[in-house]
Length: 115
Image (tube, rainbow, N blue to C red; front, top):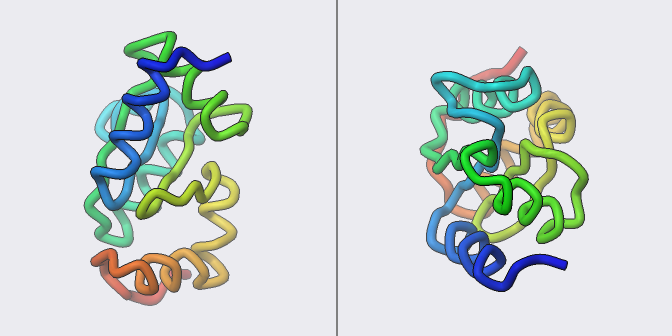
């Protein structure tokens, strides 16, 4: 069961930032390939996002998995909505669905052609 203080912290981050990426490490120094890929996707699109290093706090690492009922980081939230991890982000990017979701939710990004 998730600690109420951790749940409140997660909820606050998700709903006070347009785009939040819970990841292992930071965008500059990711600690796993999946987190690196997730941060790269957002950076490539020019999306401003808040990255939260789950390795800095073990209760947060477990808490985000409990909060979303998703087994691993990274985890992306856009305007409070859970999107998924790096594989889902990559698939959505390639299909144009991530760009559409960002546009539909009013999040600024660089709408360039993705190969």
